Length: 188
Image 1 (cartoon, helix red, strand yellow):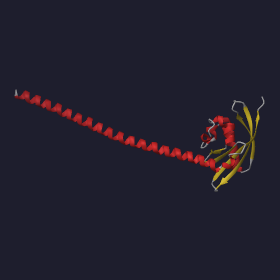
Image 2 (spheres, helix red, strand yellow):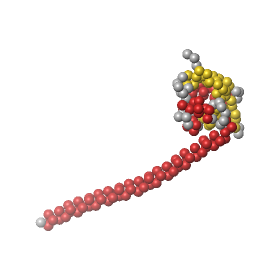
Image 3 (cartoon, helix red, strand yellow):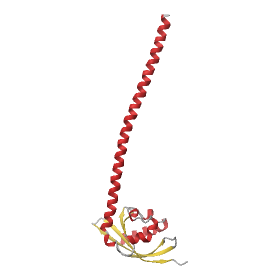
């Protein structure tokens, strides 16, 4: 009988020991998850704040670029400015006439264009032609007059007679300016 009671005590002790270990593991895991969730939430809040700050700075930079180029704001012809970054030409400025004429490509929002390259703004075929013309102007430095095909708001093809020129700012930034001198309908 003593042996049976000893074995049952041993069995109860072993079971309770397993339960204690299980509780310790469970509570330790819960504690770890709670703490890590807290830190993840804190980090997520920091990321949201940083994102909001960067977004606000970006908007301010875009608005400052418009202010910097305000001499073109009242100009009646579409004008734009691109800066060469690596192998890309990044749109830095467009005037209201540009948005009025070509805004249907980018929801008529002047600020949606800024920071994008040719291939992000235009259909691939047109973007390639624009890119080649931008390269030619940036390398040679000569004024380039071309006829480039666009699509108007109704979807009809049009020819834009474009004048492009280069300016180098602070001996480091290559700026390419463009202006649509006139637009003609393509007759089929």
